[in-house]
Image (cartoon, rainbow, N blue to C red):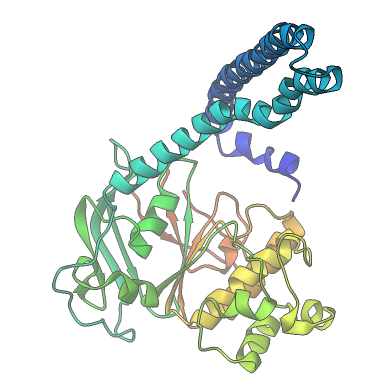
Length: 368
């Protein structure tokens, strides 16, 4: 979807004032930095030009005496007078060094701050064996409170994910939906309460073992500048060409694949084959299907798609996830009618409510 169309989501998510303020703040900082840099470059270039002018005058003054004394010929003097002008072409790029140094220093500070930031989660010193992926429930949150900032995003959340269960998660922006996804993926540990996998506390097992059980499809799957095959088998490096072909067809990318000149060897990404928003979402789906994690967290996978495409992608993704535990996180309503229960994080105490359906009519859902 075009970036301008994405802006229409901001009022819906009550995020417009905060987003505008952030853009304004960043814009002022960028403008100030650009002005400072331009002034420094202008001063350096003026200095180089001034030194060149003084060099021409100095050579002419000294050379004039030498010419009068016969120590230098007129052609040689002309050459010497032009020498500072030739050197200007050599030294003028040095004026940009100051501007470049500012950017390098800023990047160095960002990298240093990142390196000094303690990780939100770490592997345990003595990890427990990898938990099995078959017991019921697979993943259990028990009175979990979590958040990234000063105030927790949600409190006392309990959730048990059994095989095949589909839970829709709704709520306004800032209610903790993506924080819940981070907890389930163990990108973030609870402040209180526990998360367990097959009865084993998640903090006692390796991060890789948690993520072999819990997978994530977000709203902007990255497409690498590589082949279709390499982009998909990222989820399972041992996958064969036939397995990748099967998952692409399972997520309704078979016709797209057949239309590519080089099939799975077709290069994607910048400068290569263009990938639409719907195709990008389905590539993320294909990775999730190939990875075969028993629990799948879908964090706004259709957020940037038009309604018709979003509904088609949601149906295909949920069909391809049959038999898995699914957490469907959304700001809208697409896909909620295919879930078993709704968790509304914007209703105060987070409590699951079943999806209500009337078999005599079109599927309906209700939450809140």
